[in-house]
Picture 1: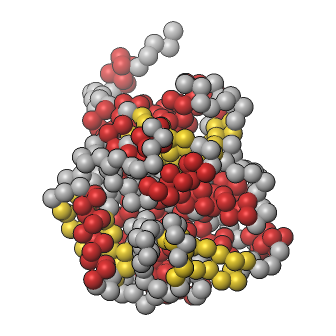
Picture 2 (picture 1 turned 90 degrees about the horizontal axis):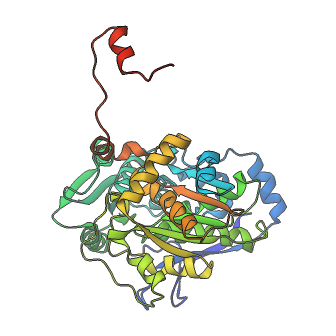
Picture 3 (picture 1 turned 180 degrees about the horizontal axis):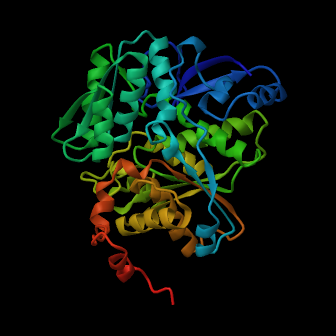
Length: 411
């Protein structure tokens, strides 16, 4: 199913722009842009083509806005496991809980889905340099894909606010890493100004092509569930591009007749950085940004999410909701995922499970519903938090007698 055409459309006023324009916001109203498709061919033909390809982002090439397949920049992203979590489900009183482990992507987070499409589009547009602001995962991913494509990469990060595991990824891949004395929102403003005044392609989630890659999470969930749609999808929310992208993916499957229903989208934020959750819970029309966001979940430590309107629309349009969780609840969920299901997620990635536990406890999720939590990044992204939480390994003398003294009694 090749798109007959696709165009850039303002998500607020519906102004239309050509796909080869380097533009990030609507020139009429300043709204964010989205990709709109018109399709040809039968969906049956599409399914035949997909069956021949491995599960990955590019399995769904017919639903992605790339014209020149020879320019695709890939590291084998996508195809991440959808784990049925029987022990977790049983512990909280549910029957059907799944965790989509995005930590299995090449650089350890869901950002790789967006970067394979975004960096490919940069090549199609003839760009030589790419840039982003980041709390960590975006910089790691962009640096890797820029290196793969042979592009110069510039990343701005908040000084002292990026987990070590993510920072070293950006450094090793050769990006120009610049720390600013400010938070993520300030870094994004600066890098946005840079890309508007220089021939540098911006690859934060303000870029609609990046979100096209991230929508493949929805396609894979549908595929992995035997072409079924879950009742609820729970997503950690920071800059808010991912929840809107996943919703877009499910809507496209529904629009072309491959899905028979749509899921409820649930966004989860930390209490210290929860502008979108507060917007939804208070039923507001305008968001109240958080000037100094703070949370142990560094990947979602964002107070002024650029995609808030898209995220709020996705949540409300789907009949979903948003919830806040404490840092303690996030860290407990991280431990439960690791010790009950063998899934090691970074704190932000565990926020969806923390939300699942809380929402189940307050009666917002029914026992028989099929729920998918998105674990957005691998736990090794932020190893320091583990060392702070747990005692160091016990040290003993090198003999069996010393070992037996510390082991639980066999009797």
